[in-house]
Length: 83
Image (cartoon, rainbow, N blue to C red; front, side, top):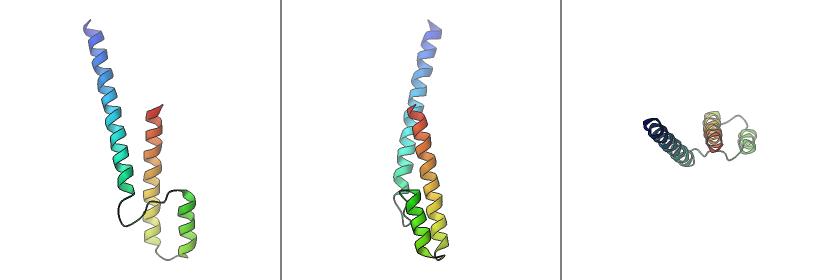
């Protein structure tokens, strides 16, 4: 009986961890959309900005690329948690 209780307890703890992780991911994704530098919605948007800036504002382009990478990573983790 104790083993079954421990298994249920561990299962509940794992569910809570996944829910906390999902909440953390949602919070981080929301934060990416705030701030001075916009997070590109897609790789095409990032490429369009890179073409349009003509080599100016490279620091801004780097920042956008970093934020887009973080967005992709968080979305991939969220997708894996859904499986």
